[in-house]
Image (cartoon, rainbow, N blue to C red; front, side, top):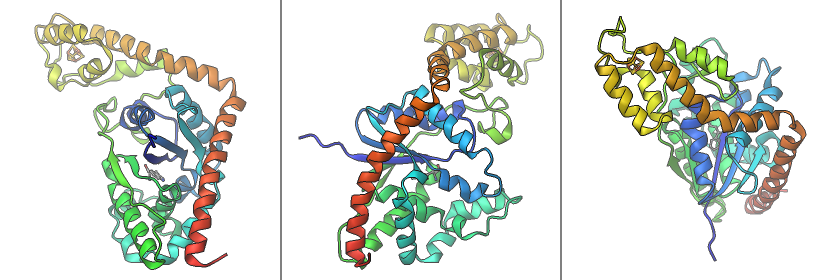
Length: 330
Ligand code: TRP
Ligand code: SF4
């Protein structure tokens, strides 16, 4: 019998998905569906750790995220898709794990220290924010996951997860939890319009929800080879972000042509961008089409996640029974 290994990963519903999320995480998740038993969830409790003050848009973000996931190609026949807060067992395990997690493990977590500095306009001196990795550990080990597909920034959290799993097994003399491995996702090959990391807060993102017209406008604003002032100046595609996008979305013949014509000033940036925008738009057209489909059928989308939640909850319940037994608590 071929038993697939299980993987778990989550995404916080902090805003609409953009191409950076697609190339950085989602496409990888979609591929992993073929080889693993995948559990993917929307980490809405985690979104609260930094966004607890204003929750007015949370449910809208969750619905959009569900829609974008299905449109991009996460498939309920292959993966278990659900919403974290709908499986309350995560919270119980979080509570129990918090009893055995030493605070210094959390205080020296690099993402904790980073975020407190970076999000200085928010009060993150909360218990929930410090405990972020404990909740994440609960998310993962409640499904006895073998692997967790994440970006490098999340590696410290997976390390804490392994330590917590080990400590639980050691303290309660049971082998309830396997120690999951990080499955590293290559960092996104795509940068924002201004060549910084693509991010909603930098206002440099192309969203999966952008219309063809919006994509064209955004592509027009993109920075090209900064040394190329006039169309008659030869350009250098190696330092041009538009060229990077061509490599992702245009066929190899076009890429070669642009590479050559840019260097000999045979193509201007305006025309080059037009071609790229066209290629980009047709590459994401299937996602757009599905997005339209699902947007007009929110009940169908909710139903997919409802089914996934049921499945996840059943497994989480079984694990919790073992956990309570091991601890000898009701
Ligand atoms: N912390 C993750 C992130 O910001 C999101 C997350 C929450 C997660 N729980 C998880 C990822 C469990 C993997 C497994 O990207
Ligand atoms: Fe970049 Fe294209 Fe302009 Fe060359 S022609 S600098 S590749 S946008």
